[in-house]
Length: 413
Ligand code: HGY
Ligand code: MN
Ligand code: MN
Image 1 (cartoon, rainbow, N blue to C red):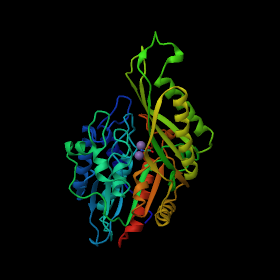
Image 2: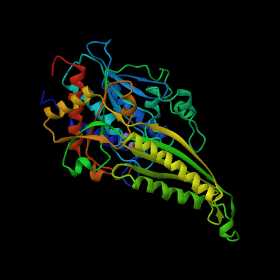
Image 3: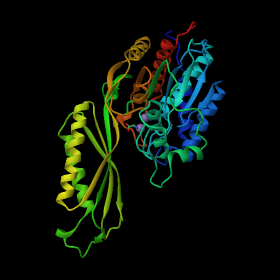
Image 4: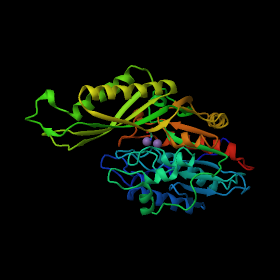
């Protein structure tokens, strides 16, 4: 029904209230996975869901499921959701928009006393960002059977704290098994995190799938020695080697335009002292491309380059792949539901591939899945200045509502 809309002001207020948790001085959000701030955000979300009459359950990976009953309690639920954890310099919308848009759908159904055939659920997926515990999207990955739960619980952050221990510490180590929970369909609403929709003046991205991703941990080992007394030719300088590798890695992506991207955003140096030649450098590689074969060949090339540079400099190097997601395609029925809902709301739109990874990528392996994008200012994300307009966010939420109702079925809308 065309005049069934969500409440834009209420959605915006929920986003701003959530943004107060972990608010940064530059206007962003810092609720890194399983920190006290993440816990506070989760607690607020759970309280809101309970106030909206949902029953809330938590699984062994800390994934949260808030359920609004449908007429047929036996039917598999139509689920939406995303993540509440953020990058250290995150924005107010990445992930949290998809979670609170789902809550707004439930609040709207309550206001209009609409009963769906299938139950509706809103989910929160643990550690989507992978900034504290690599790899990213680990909890939706365990849910989809891509990772073993014990492996995930044993992941350590740079302080040696484990993911399982931190789940327990914040009170979100649920007793429900992670996975084996059938969904009729899953929809994730998200800001695009890129410039395409804004550049083309479109409000809705009908997402066809997501590009492939490979993450590598690289450890370069040389020898600590004195910065002043060690002649250049005899140095085993892990930093000089790592710097040459980083340039070579960036050039591999530049050599494969227009879509290949390579990022080195995390580096650790030992002993990290300005007058000691670095004996060890750790850096992380994020490599992505919509073409799976090209992604694989670039991964192989990067490994070979690091080994060649290391041997030429008398260094050791270990290149360890820590994550691999092949490019994925979303479900045609879900894509059609998003397309029909966009047409019903008469919104300017385009079909597109996601450059970012999302929990929907793993969920697509165990349930029919679709995504809805809305524009963000200058395409900026993973930045404290991340911004989106209340109107665009509400439009995406309306599309989410109608796409979910399309699949969940209802007598009165
Ligand atoms: O890295 C990603 O693509 C996502 O934002 N975590
Ligand atoms: Mn996200
Ligand atoms: Mn993100």
